[in-house]
Image 1: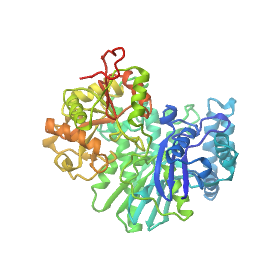
Image 2: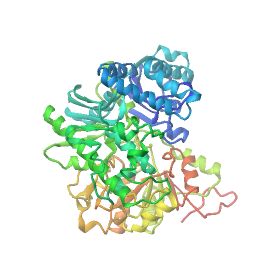
Image 3: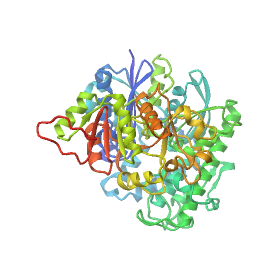
Image 4: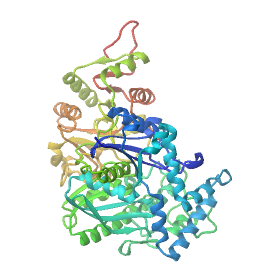
Length: 599
């Protein structure tokens, strides 16, 4: 057996948090067997600058192996190669980027503690960053870590591999796009068999950076919220002086303040961004100009993405497309691409397309270099940790909360009845999901037929902006009944238009523009979730539930029974279901009674 551990993120040297989204993926003979983000273990959202030691320990324990059983470690970054790529661009580009990086370092609010110097040091001497990552393995797992093969895999090659190999395509146009990584903001490859040939690399514009700049200025809760806000505004050309999709051109320097001596804000230029919309604080209301800016940004993102796809397909001649990189989370574009027959015959978007997913791609690249098969096609995203029934019961007994146990058929009918009665249900089953979406194993569920369900989940649990949409999970067989141009969509990563005659029936999951971001559930993939939705359908005539991730605002999705109980009792959720165990608020534990009926 050949075990390859892929990991992503950048542990900050000198204790400084410089990276984000650390995660790991473990392959056995090329087969993806376990993966998880560090944030799920340490409970720190995104875990910036943290080495994924807990996630590594879990994947090894889950596979029943020790660290010494690993054949190779693959890091989804190649700082040395990135610097060489940067140097090859010529003096003009080098000078501009050097000024940008010097400015970023000098603006650092903790310059005196060494961050500015560290940024420059790691950039100018990239081998130091590689050595630091290797030292982290030795620190956490022993000096034997230095004996294990360690490979740096180019950031965008890692993204590309995470999309192409799990896609199941024997040929594809593979596109990656994000903020930046190893000197690139995007790439195009033509995958044929196990080979991926580079067709184009992009570095002089960044869709991800443009998105991040606007998000930072708008002070919204997270970048994805801009997509939801876009439906309430109208594009107004305010970005026209800064971007031109036809030429694949952006002037991010102006928006970021790299050439603005009056700007002292790290990330964006107040002078320039104020021309787009008024400044606002995180708790301030939204003006029409903010909504229009979100709509304008979404339009420009789609224009850039479509232009890249047109050029890529024109070069490769292949309309089967595989996508990864943070921009791959733009479900609106993904849905539109899916429905464009001139550009797209078939589409696979890596369900964990951001930097976390790069850990899988890096492991795939190194695994193949060791002679293993290409990764198997992904049929699900349930690669995380789980808790057995006895483990769940032990936690419940230890905490001392009343609970009841129901067999499957009775459980599904009872929970479906609670949802139909207007209750908010937390549903924890089996392995945790790989990626940012809860897909029925770490989910909060509610009735999609009543728009009040979305309001209640927002106010009692998620504490997020009221205008942000919720997504539905529906049985695969009924998708075409509710959606126009329906396609199997198991990862909640594409939007579809809801049929007009069905919008009132599932009003809690229909966005302002008449679209929704569905998960179509196949029984062979997740039988317990399928059977619950089917039970709700038998009871109500609507085999659809509102599904959102089981976490509070600003926290990672829950992983363990303890996480679930803490979140349950810290929110307005009515019912918690873990495996076959049910917990409901307001039930008094009787002395000496192990299980008390909750309904």
